[in-house]
Image (cartoon, rainbow, N blue to C red):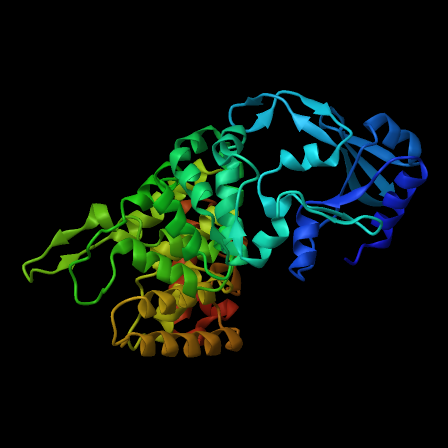
Length: 442
């Protein structure tokens, strides 16, 4: 195992002072899988006070749970004392921990066998729970009793599904059954932590694997109840060969791995069940599901405490995802760019394309998206005015040159001028726009 020099220094220093030191957890797992670890955690039988005494620069970041951050050349490394956990509170964190001297006891409290391995160059791999075999066999398995592990920390259920998706593993039968039995406990976990795990699943190569497991285990109805309503929802139309849920997952897999785009794909048809009706043609229709879905997505994401920028982007993408234009004018495309943004419009086109490819063939509307993409690219490269900010005049000009008073009318005139220049970019000249402004109320 390739160990960074800073980590080697820490482990060597611990041994020189009469203690043990091992790399532990995810970095060991990732190294065995030939993946680059995100960070390196060290565990030791040295007590926190010992760690602070041994190393010159330390920060007591999690002293209550035995974690001290050691600074080497300003680089931080977490060093944690072997411990066993006391009684857990609210299915998330232990009320207290007890420091121990045996690494096996420390590893036995961890979530999954693949995360319960330790390593140093002196003793090699320490693997009491056959984590290496589970890695080889591509299995996610709890350490010890799965029900106990999930009752201790209910977030582990989502972590199991996330690891399964990230690594393309399978969840061992008893572990999967325990997730199903304890799925209701996810209600005790903060929405921020739930969202963080969802994000990691969404950015995997195949997010659908995670959401199929969420539905199978019963977690979905607690985390995203509106999405649960799409499961098995027959669309009753020749244009769709999947229910709403399966169509949604297909779209999620197809769009580019950008968080706001994958969230938009996940929620783009969230309002189909409430908008559904059978028309006179005996086919299913979902008029307005894009607009209602945009509003509902905002509510869902705010409950999960997503940031405002992400919420806004998802809202726009869902609201516009049905606007696949056939033979559009340049002005219509410019208005689309204006409603989205120069950056987000290409995410919208990607969502449109993925949505079409997730319907029943033939995918006739793909040609429309291709034409839109080509022409939007050309428009953006031409630097023609696309928003009020691109106009050669602004509100101050209307006040100074035309003697107008600040107020609502200024915004209405600028909107009027923008529409004019979207139709004819040549009008975007200061004198021309001022003249058009004079004519606004005539």
